Length: 393
Ligand code: SF4
Image (cartoon, rainbow, N blue to C red; front, top):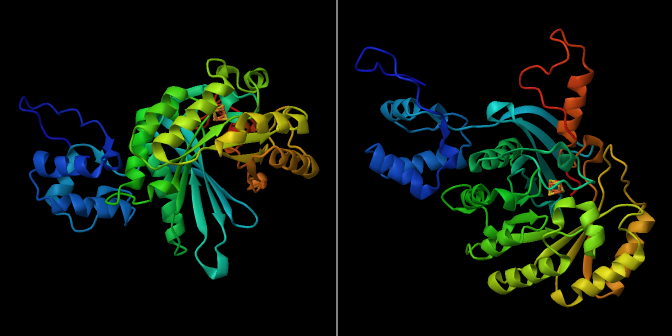
């Protein structure tokens, strides 16, 4: 970034840094045409450089005149806002996890899950993004929930997670096909930045995914669900239920008290009526806690006439006291739920050997930092993750 001498001969403070990735196409035009006095097609060049070329800095955007690059630089515009801190890949190569360092040293995790395509077609490549660093919801089985809340992510920090994987996939001639907002944090507690990120990812002049290829997962922020229904988006909605009754749910999600299971099911019905998209309910199966067949029957009675689908998710193993049920227990629960009249599937286990449940990589990184002998004494080196445990979904 450059600075210009101030009229009194002193150096002006540099412009605050901001990312071009934050701007929706209409805002990019406003910047380029109204503020920088450039022709409209320059906005298209920048958008093309960001979302087709996956530029990491202004200089990577081809075709821009030097004066425009210098102006963007002088105004503090960056492109990339996330730096790779760690990357791990599962043995079968289908799951990749990134630990990304954001402004201020904040660390977040993102996961790429690939599902082989039929008959040699391209695989489905789903990126799971984080919307917050840490989480205030406090789910007792989730490593992110146990680390507490650090901060909301900006929309550009959410989009940057997808673009990091898009770059990786491009090297293999593949591309991102789906995005799920199921990583660290509660997306609807960071509502406006989440919606801005969804719009950036689904605008055909920006990242260009189909709206139906995006799913937002919430642990049950009802006001957010109702707002989302009014956005005119076709995004999928997943509600993390994890229990068929309020008593058990509040044990697993201590912040759930204001929203009963009945309220959540009503919100799901409203979302379906407004958007035409059926809601998925997520149910993390925890051995001996919520995986008993009688609870499947109770869940069936709660959801039977909603037409909703239930995703059963055997808990990702974490360092806490909660265990993943055996395969037999999972299948027994699934059969009981089906017998109660509810469609359900068991989510394929992905990436356990690379700590793919959200927060686990960050936790492992923190543990490694804590164990490593340090010449600086007991505190973490600059930029190292703060000690923390993550999300079971
Ligand atoms: S499961 Fe989701 S909502 Fe609950 S604490 Fe973890 S990240 Fe937050």
